[in-house]
Length: 156
Image 1 (spheres, rainbow, N blue to C red):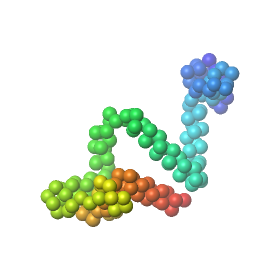
Image 2: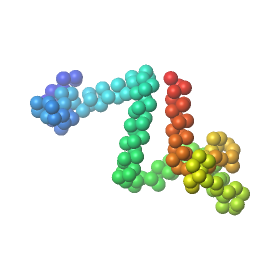
Image 3: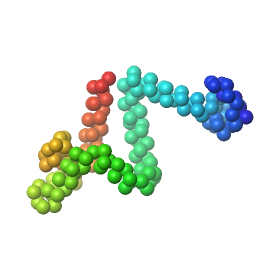
Image 4: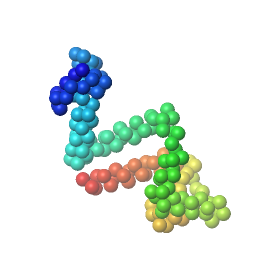
């Protein structure tokens, strides 16, 4: 049993995060207080510190890449796709229209406009589904990352 220094509630050690430098091997505040402090800090930093927001976005992006390479969350891919299609009907319709147009020969797949590799169709405006920019997966991801970053910077 241990007493949290923030809320003064006595709880079992399982309710405290492990911390090797503490005398008993556990943090001095309970998991509930630690989570609340973290959430408060994230809320404060997100509203006031652009540099922190951008570095946190990059940290999360790299974390996701590591998880995908280990196969984490690959089991719910079909469910995630279904939710994406439901949330973004205009985007999904544009994807289908482009794929159908390629299949019937209305448009031709092109190589990436930046590097010449195999490309994906990128829409700047989903209401114009056949107006696409051809980008490889790396340049496509970079393009969207840059758009989101610009949107975040402009909102500060």
